[in-house]
Amino acid sequence: LWLINEKKGIIIEAKSRKKEHNAFRKEEHGQLLIAERWFKTKFPDIEALPVSVHQDKIATKASFAEGVKVLTFDNILLIIKETKKLYSQLIDYHLDEKALEVQCQKLLLQFDLLSERFVEKYLDTFETMT
Image (cartoon, rainbow, N blue to C red; front, side, top):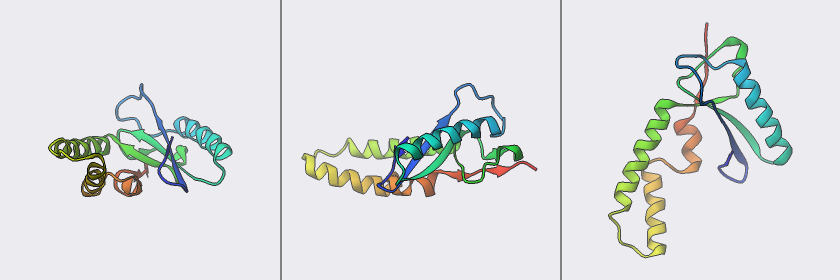
């Protein structure tokens, strides 16, 4: 669960024992729907965005994945890469706390790591198998 702002929350579901090259299935979507239902009871005024961590963007037709976003392994690697670049620049600065906070915001923007951009930049839409 990640509240990215006052109006939107991301519900992230990841499977640790998922076999490689398996499409997103209805069982996984069902678990995500349960988490989304819980979220809506706890945070009724916040939009819920269900997200599955998955190796690719492929979903079975039976999963009815419309409305579910996917965080692919490739995008996770991209997030890690951008975070490493941000960190490597940040450690070179010797600033007081306030100036460091300002510099952090600039670097988060530069490397596209602001929460406001996360959905657009790193989350994809599932593609249904034919």
